[in-house]
Image (tube, rainbow over all chains, first blue to last red; front, side, top):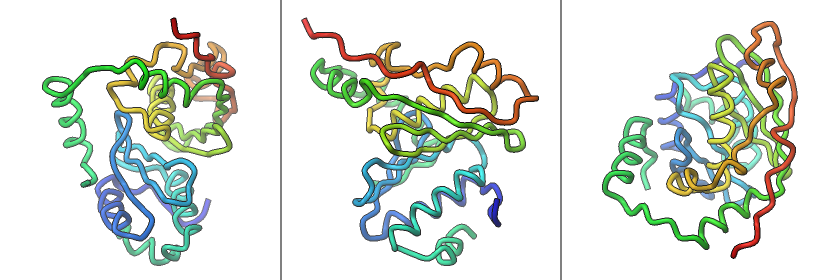
Amino acid sequence: MGEYADVKRKKILRMLEWLKTQSGFSVDNGGDHQWVIRHIAWKRPFPISFKHEVMNKFILKELVGKIVATGVCTKEQFDEHLK
Amino acid sequence: MPVLSPLKYRLSLLRDVLFGDQEIIGEVLVCHQNKLSGKSVQVSWQRDGKYIVGSIFMDGQKFMTQALSAKEFVEMVNDTIYAAYDIPPKYIKKLGSDYYFRPSQEEFEKLNNQAVKKAVFNFSGTMQKIPAVA
């Protein structure tokens, strides 16, 4: 599975506050329980649920892959914002 | 626009219901329904600790969600899709049952069965086509 563990929701929120300041990204709320991450190169936004106290590691791994693929940061830089 | 915490967002939704503009414009509703019409949805899921974690494949895109129970999982899959397709909460309630993805009874029982660790299924085949507007 890799090195990620489930991450607390408040850390995700803090990371999203950083992410929305990055070029090409925007973050808002959607649905009933979602944070919605958008990037200008993505066909559709990537919603992540805030319904539970933690975000599951599988979802986090998918999110990291999508964000790193945009070139906005490296995985290591991303990880810094989850601390 | 700020990223709202879960509590603030839920309060903002409640404020919209109580004091906001709840008018549904028919053409806008049809537009939102059209985004989902005819789309097939495949969901693969696995158990990870107390969570059911799902990957949703729709329209060539992959989304993910998590839930604590089978019932919540179905709700979260739908909530994720509505968010991904930018359907506002006040329109979600008006989409109609044809635009709510449901697993079959057998698939739902697998979700409920702790002995089943993972599975793949299609949510009700495809979304319904839009009926002709009178």
